[in-house]
Amino acid sequence: MRRGVVHHKQLHVDHEAQAEARVPDSVARLRALNVELAVERLEIELVTSMQAIESEWRALDLDNLNSLHQSYDWCAAWVEAHRRPLAVIVGKADADTAFILPVEIVSSRGIRIAKFIGADHSNINTGLFAADFAAALGSIAPEHLSAMLKAALGDHADLLLLQNIPLSWRERPNPLVRLPTVQNQNYAYQLPLLENWEATLKQLNAKNRRKKFRVQSKRLEALGGFEYVAGGTPEEQHRLLDAFFAQKSQRFQALGLPDVFSDAETKEFLHGAIDARDPGIPAFGLEMHAIQLKGEHDGHIAALAGISRKGDHVVCQFSSIDESIAADASPGEFLFWQMIQRQQDHGVSLFDFGLGDQSYKRSWAPEETAHYDVVLPMNARGAAMGLLHRTITRGKALVKSHPRLYKIAQRMRRFA
Image (cartoon, rainbow, N blue to C red; front, side, top):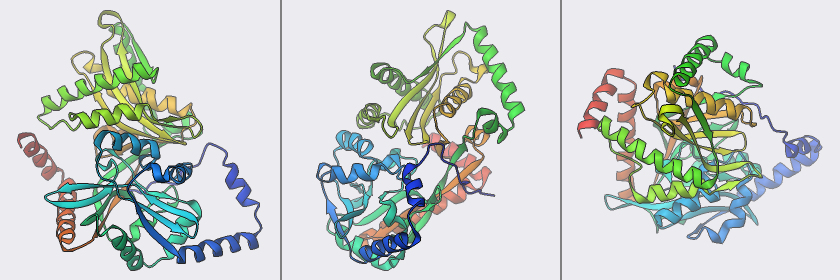
């Protein structure tokens, strides 16, 4: 049975929320009424330059419930690398920015598709919503919102396809899922980090987990020891990212799978994400972590991973292992122990393993979250492509729900 994500407590004091709690009910009701009245006058405009709305964008970035994948710096790194046409959707309620949907135009089979910027390398998408307006936007009739989006986007795209959106994220419902949707075939997997490491491990099989960790540690020490590399200078992180590309390429080749990190644009984007950091939130676009061997195999990188952070939420973007040395020490799993424990000690309350069902994620993550795709055609061509997307997505979901079918599909993919 699929389980929804639990309500996670914030570890950081939210002073703004405390101030809100002191607002008299009458003032709160008046403010809510003003927001609802403003939403009734909602207008949607299209912007083709990120810089034109940078200040409004960065203001919405400050809300930690808006996904890091829609943050200004993350999107800027992608746009700089790929240089696709932009059609950023901006919702204005009177003089206030109610929401921003960072969208680019991608062509597929001659169809213009408006997608989230960097959609192919994102694990959770929410759009950017002002907190006051997020709930009020739910009062707009879905047909009216659809019509407004079509009017704004119709000359630029045939289909609006916004993928991997949770119905709600940490108790905040997402207004976008009131539009036409299909459930995505992939779930995301999360581990809540509780008040201490002991409490976090109790959500799992703590005794077995600790035993495996001790065995892995002894095997790595028997090889001469190891160093857990967490972040480091920008130069060191860029070096580790290049090592990841090489390691992952070999892994994909051994499995007979296509290398999704092979193109120059993706590599440039991820290098750019390393340089996107905002210690004030705290947030970083990408930070590299690794298990590096000592002794006879000094310098050998046994496992690598890249994580992103916004507020108290960390997402693992990718990971890889080199099984030529220390395979019996399970360096990939050992790296996750080190990373998660470090995040526990640095104010993180949710470690996200991202999209895709894999056994190591299930072994760590007691919670999973369903994602949905908004599929809104602008015209007949877009309707045909939207129908194709729905059909393919449901077909993939069906295959993934039957283990035998999924194994067959994986074999076919290797020989495709």
